[in-house]
Image (cartoon, rainbow, N blue to C red):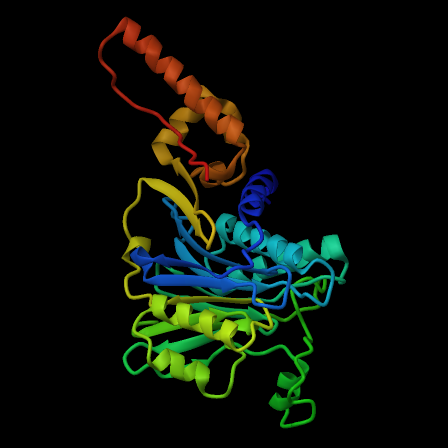
Length: 363
């Protein structure tokens, strides 16, 4: 399924998702009321976390626009934690973007398994990462997801009441769910991304209404602090930007023993997911540069196919939606051919009846 399109998109995201900085780094995304922050801490030599906000808008009715907030914590006690997190992020996002599955929960489940198999293929179970996030589509449906011990908290924006909605995949957490206090402080993971086919059971929690709620998605370095401090920080902060700044700074002040990454979002204005679009696009935000990929669609794409039939080779049906993520050389070839055609028309006539352009923005 969409093998070439998937590989091209995967590679672009992988190249973009460089290792997070060791020094504290912050980004405030005002347009979607969201903030991100990360720190390598004071002890670790590298930052093995990954984090991303993905805004995906589609013209095609076969795909539902969505926004994703996710963090990953590469497992430092295993092999190449940073690489595991980078692979998992690239596979997870690529599968979500190209999927035409209409049921959001199934779409997420398939993408998680793709990430799991991608990491396992390289490390054979000797490397892994956590994954936690929230995805919301244009129908205002949401799914909270997690594998491992990175967490998702749901916050009442009105009274700042906070509760953990993800499930810790630790030995202590599993025993506690069965009523046992034995090993209650054990943080040993019982499942993670990279274990192999059929060996993980991701936690997927659908939400039908998210009005008045905010979400905090964090790796363990950002929420492991003295009892009551996490909740106190949230209750006294007024915005996502203030929350992520305080959580990261506190994680450093109490020793910076681990990498810490956190995303905070108040999803108050998601109208952009419902707007009529003439351009399909995905945009990835991190603490590094933003990656944006765009493409003109529908009639314009069909006109481009007449100029360059090679563009029609991608699977995806009549809408040609995956063309967005086709080989860049083909897209540029179509654009070049279009310009030549326009030049020829201008020589024979001053009238230009139509404009055809496919645009792919590089990061």
